[in-house]
Length: 591
Image (cartoon, rainbow, N blue to C red; front, side, top):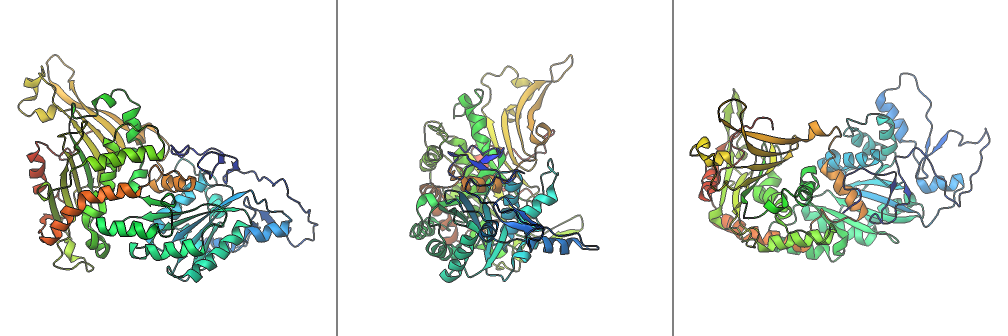
């Protein structure tokens, strides 16, 4: 397991898998001079007397206060004052230590929403926490024409500091933005990537260069970008890694073709397939909850668990993403990756160790033990227009980017089964949808009824009301709570259902890191535990490809449900077939 998985980054940092922690943190106020450094003392008349040496060797000029200077002008002035590390190393008289390492992070597709809203803020959060190495450079790469300063201004609009760590926020932002640069180029141009390579080398300044490329681009141009990055911008003396965003194909065939194409230019250990749900705090805590608490591990089987529910709901529609979404649908977008990955983590056997390969081996075993999904075990739906409180909400097909006759599901429910000794016969129910009544992602574990329960008469005929249930709420308002039966205080014998509740916001004052922070840090460290291996991806697609093909070939019409409702009625019939009631039907108190 990564030593930094909790994001409590120590003042030293390793970029070699945590084995050699000899680097001074980028967040440290100290500046260490290499042993070979030749420091030239400048006279008062020296032209560089107003220069400030940054931690990676870059130098920023001190800017004197200007009266009536606007914040935007100040930001532009500050950000224009950065020169490359190599250039200032030479001016300052430093001999570059070729044994030092540097990390260059290139965000391919830097002008897109994902980069602006998630990737750059996550990188800043890591810098703010002191989790990035002393020497690092961030480059944005996209087709849009943009200068370094324009990139920094764009990025600055989305940066925030932790609620519990506001001190020096503006100063830290300025320091971070001075490490950010931009190069405009085509995604299929080896010449443009060669130009990027030249710029990266200038900033790396002769150090051992480790390079991370984050592909925040549409999947149809993955291969071109990987080919160009691999052939024209790979590291010559360090590691090169590539983070690939979902979707990883549309079915088994296209996924296998994508993997084959990627492996023409990269080894498997260079490919980091990201599923950001695996970086969420409560998903990360799932194995800790199970394997480090004696009260849960013995109960984690068919003997005590009646069913497991994985529920994902959003209270908004496609919101302008209709063109992309219509090509994939809710099953490919959410169930085949996010929910299935959580299921595999939940159901896996105890791994030999916390090593990435041991954990991924156990996940693959779970996926290979599962029955391929059958059409009769799937319900699909699509939201329609609905008026509530005088407000009219649009139907899915009202989206201008969606065909009027589209049958793409915006809701799906499914029953899956794992044919092994631990889980034989236990239904794993998945439910995912858009434009529902709330926004929520949770795992609900419903335990079996107490045999020969002395208090059955107190619960009436509905024994489900007396069922113990463990709920792991992934988002929002993260929590873990266990439903138990309890006597209401008083002279009578009246029973009540109560919650033993771990509410994260109440228990922990620290702000929970975004999933992208954890995953980016793991990719820099080479920790693959939370990334998807190719055989894992193949096993996941083999479960869903047959039913997806059948849905499309037979043109199954989805059940329509009103925008803002609880979804299609068919989902309740599917659950009832396996004697299950969805656990999210009622509004629960104190959760």
